[in-house]
View 1 (cartoon, rainbow, N blue to C red):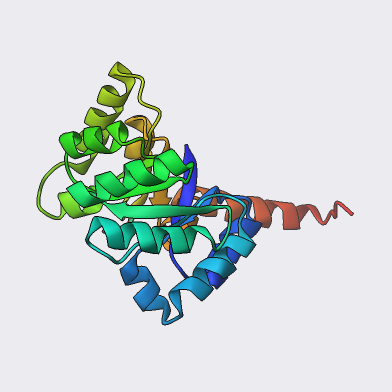
View 2: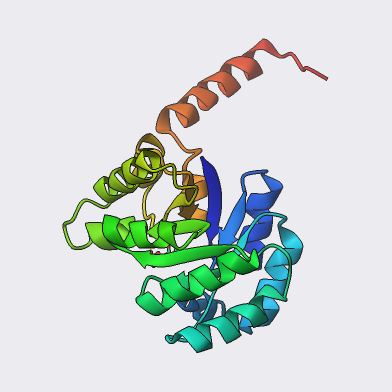
Amino acid sequence: MKFFVDTAIIKDIRELNDYGLLDGVTTNPSLIAKSGRDFKEVIAEICGEVTGPVSAEVAALDYDGMVAEGDHLAKIADNVVIKLPLTLDGIKACRYFTLKGIKTNVTLCFSANQALLAAKAGATYISPFIGRLDDLNIDGMELIAEIRQIYDNFDFKTEVLAASIRTANHVKEAALAGADVATIPPGVIKGLAKHVLTDKGLDQFAKDWASTGQSIL
Ligand code: E4P
């Protein structure tokens, strides 16, 4: 499963990229607002940091506006992916960018039928939001499994990008359900390495090693 980081903070992107853990980056208007930076400037900077896909979301709600903004964003760098909302206008814009050979990420997906529309429009990625469904006591992971099955039934090439991931358990469950990608907040990615028994084991090994009085170098 590929890992995208869900952030517009360059420092975090750089750190995770240095660990070799990053396959791409996703942003959204809320993350851009949180960064406090100019949207196009920050997207250009992220595209300079990573070679993988970088999702940049349109702000327009109508087809013409999405096309104009998406065409503009696509010029920033070759690895920009145009992120479009899952509305009828967004689906139409997705078809437009697909025919132009520009990658798309259809976002704010909350049902299998919505994911079916995105695949029919040729979306590169579909982003089902797990955490926001869980917030409503609806099993977000079930949606990932449904989309996986539908895409496999019809051999759709659209990649399932598990989004709105909040916990390490979400990452594991998304991987088990067959998501192609997970877009994950930086803290959750780093948390995947943590285990209390790893820390305990390291403490013991460090003590025992010190007691030998040896050095490796
Ligand atoms: C995905 O593309 C979105 O940017 C993101 O995963 C939304 O996560 P949230 O529901 O935690 O805001």
